[in-house]
Length: 94
Image 1 (cartoon, helix red, strand yellow):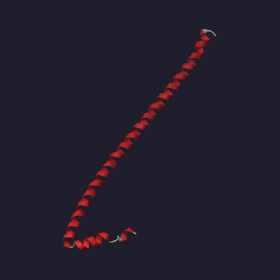
Image 2 (cartoon, one colour):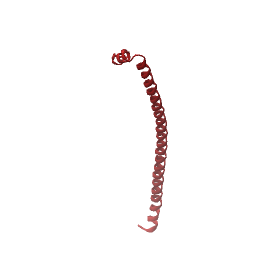
Image 3 (cartoon, rainbow, N blue to C red):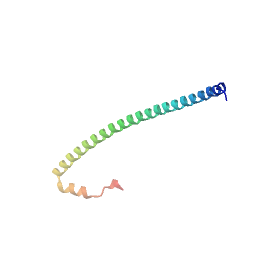
Image 4 (tube, rainbow, N blue to C red):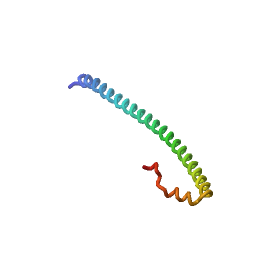
């Protein structure tokens, strides 16, 4: 095989290799972009959920304080009746 024949085969082979490299690089770039977008979406969702959880915890703390105050008021009115109510089965649990 002469140098001319070798170079005639080398040109198309180099073109194919270059095309494969470009395709692989494009695939990696697009994959990285997709993963980055997905990570950003998951981060935004996590931040929303964290804010919701904080709001729920604050509401629960407020309800617990209100319940404690109501129990204090009921106990002050009639401690025996409050004890009876606490030990009675809850009809809404069925």
